[in-house]
Amino acid sequence: MKIIQKPNNARGTRDFGPKEMSLRTHVFTIIKNHFEAFGFQAIETPAMENLHILTGKYGEEGDQLVFKILNSGDYLSNTEAVDFSLGSKLLIPKISEKGLRYDLTVPFARFVAMNRNDIAFPFRRSQIQPVWRADRPQKGRYREFYQCDADIIGSDSLINEAELIALFQSIFSSLNLRTNLIINSRKILFGIVSVLGVSDLFVPFSVAIDKLDKIGWDSVALELISNGFSISQLESLRSLFQFQGSNNEKIQLLDDFFSDNEVGQQGLSEIKTVLDFSALNGFDNSNILFDFKLARGLSYYTGLIYEGKACDLPFGSIVGGGRYDNLTEAFGLPNMSGVGISFGIERIIDVMRELNLFPDIKTSASKILLTYFDLTGQSIALKIANELRKSNIASEVYPEIAKIKKSFEFADKKGIPFVGVIGEQEIKDDNITLKDMKNGEQKLLSISDLIKSL
RNA sequence: GCGGUUGUAGCUCAGUUGGUUAGAGUAGGCGUUUGUGGUGCGCUUGGUCGUGGGUUCGAGUCCCAUCAUCCGCCCCA
Image (cartoon, rainbow, N blue to C red; front, side):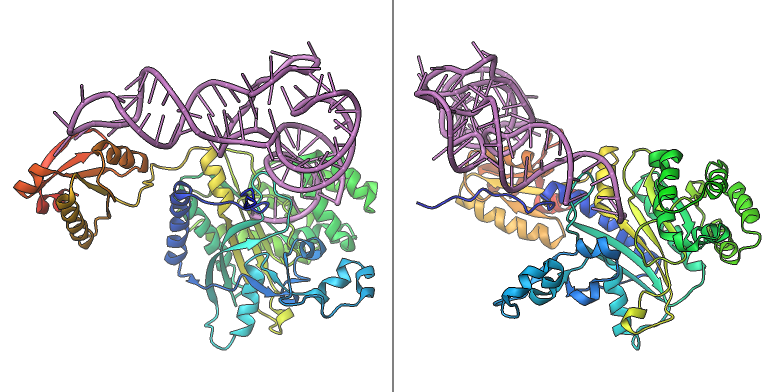
């Protein structure tokens, strides 16, 4: 007796049936078309990378979330009993030298460093591939998910930032999904802490301030104090962060705040420039919100950062990105500034589904199902199907002689819009009965008329 | 890594104070007279109740453990 294993998906992973796939394809196609319209060139990189490529790029937490692959063969061959008592951190390099990619940006940096002589810079690259994170799954968070990245590397012009914003606007306007784009600059965050004379507290400051909308000023203040901020510093921060106003009013506010601070001024002028460039993109840009609370996690960002969120639904961010100045340096290629944007397609789909934003998308591959009652009809059906396919009409033949009811039920269930019936009379008269499954109407057509009417 | 929730048919869920052969809806199959579906009607196939242990004469129900799930925290798309 065979032992039956319960079928299930690995944690945090999903199957996509035909119906799901048609929704996904819809979104993928739109994103891909816009990537192309902006001149981005598609590349792909392997699912697995050597571990040293991935580690140290995402901070300590990120390193833990990288899926490690056991060495093939006897993966214990390099280990001794002692190694096991030293903890997993020291054991990993001895049993694993590869991992699954955690994002698309770091593999891209490796790619650029390796192909620097063949690439025409500035290089516009797009990449749509799955990434893996050993995170704890929850709402909108999966262990396997696709990222859709567009990056421009090899130029520090702020036009690039503005181009990515235009790309953002055009994609979401095509998807019909209302989104806000929140922008900030790491330089502004750094400017704030340096005005206060605590530049060494940049990281805890960013982490805390990023949570302001979520947990409120009092909790943030407590967190800042426990990280070494003084009461007087908190007071200046409070007036800054409780300020409500338009982009211009915020810029004005910071302009005064940064009167003696170079980095802050620089960050601020970058924001201004990007907003000015963006005004030329032909979209209503009132959804671009300058918010100097935004911090973002990934440690490699150095300049402008941004995050996209759905307007009509509280959800995590569905787009993220920013400028990185030194990502390729670790791979021996310094002075290569780049800026990127990443569309979180899984979350975009989740949000669109919840908001019911998907248009009627056809789920069936075939436009017509051919059915018949006997062997003569069967061979005619095969012939007609192949003729239809030559005219680019997706067709399939019901595979067996059965009651006609069965084929109608089959077509209905599968969402095939037309059924062609080939019976005794049709064979005699050399035509076909075409039934429109939507309204039940039927007409008798010659084969050439059939091709025309589909 | 931490906190909570839920695991009964393919799916959504009932199942009383522990008590005989565990139910419903839906999906699936067959039929409803000769070539007509999406919507009627009839019949019917599906479950060692997540897994392992314990208490008990008796456990889907109580206890313990474990695994999985979903939702928060951290972090992120």
